[in-house]
Structures are given as C-alpha cells and as structure tokens.
Image 1 (cartoon, helix red, strand yellow):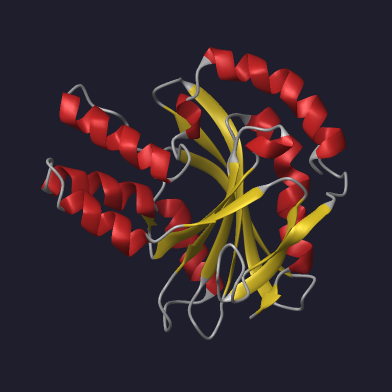
Image 2 (cartoon, helix red, strand yellow; image 1 turned 135 degrees about the vertical axis):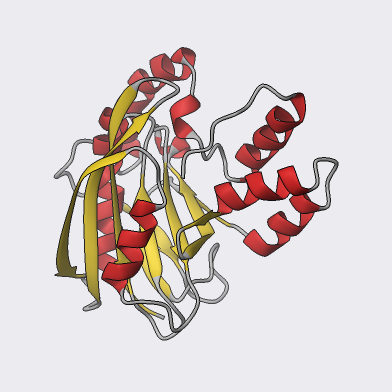
Length: 237
C-alpha cells in the first residue's frame, strides 16, 4: 500500500493531509535531511528509547489495547519505552476526505492510506520520540474474516512491489497463535528496496495485523526490538 503523489495540485494537498493524519504513512518519501538526522538520533534511541540493534531487548514503555488505553484493540501488548501510540478513526477520516474539495479523489487516496487488503488502520505507534523514523502500525478487520494466515497474505498482496515474502507460524508470549511474514518492499520513487515485517492473529472480534516498516532497512532493524516486544507480550483482550 504505497501511494505515489501525482502532479495535480489537489492530489498533493490531499496526500499531504492524509500523511499528517497517519504521521507520514509514506515513510519512504522522507528527505535526505531526515536520514542524516536519524543517524545520530538512532544512537540516542538505542540507549533511551528501548530500540537499538536486532536481538536487543526493548525496554517496556506501557501497554495498549485495553479500554482506556491510547488505542483500544481486540488485543493488548506492550510498547517500547518512549514510543507514542495514537488511535486512528479510519471511518471518520474516510468520511472527511470524501466530503472535501477533491471529492472522490480525496476518498480514493484516503482509502489507499487507511485500508490494506482486508484490514483497516486502527493505531500507529511512532518511533520518532525514541530516536528512529518509522512506525509500528496496527490494522484490524471484521469478525468472520479469513484465518490469520489468509489475512496476512492478502495484506501483503495489497502492497505493490513486494518480493521474497517468507511466512511462518508461531505463538505470541500471551499464547495466541500467529502467522508472521518478512519481505522486501521496493520503492519506485526512490528506486530503493527495504525490509518490512508483519504478523497477524485471529480474535473473536476479527483479525489483527501488526506491521513494522521504517524509512530503510537500517531503521527497520533498529526498531525491531519494539516489534519483538509486541510479539512477546501480545494477548487477547
């Protein structure tokens, strides 16, 4: 689900507004200045933000998912220290975009940002306060949708320019059966390939997908401990 920005002024305005809603969903469009800033920020994040190299345990910064938390979800899990969670009301944002000046165009762009395959954006956990550029995003589906593996495959299939997807099953630390995928995404805009990871679980309220992107593979690996923390602590309800 990578959305390119067209040359029409209206498309740029709408895309920019939607990117603001999702904290910059098109992470691959970050400029060289941000890349340079992230190089020094990543070191700070490794010591203060619970990120750092893959294999390093992330410091716990709180729990989301339960009623009253930053994001109310069918599952709950711990987030890394300093990462900031924000709920996404996809239905509200879709309605606002379709009613704007760009009408159907705005609605189509909003749909591209907020939906991927059978799931809809529900929460994003921003790594920037911890010193990295990227997000751990949570996507949810409707009750009765396909099993976790089928949902995850449909999620990946909906993202263009994906290759080398590798799937495997596991159980989260909370005992929930899950399916995980690691794959490569190639940005046509930047002619650059980066690593991404996601896993899915089934719940009585519908499937849930957690996805970790990142501006590039280095950022992805530095944020991986936060993703692993979610895997280790995820439970139903």
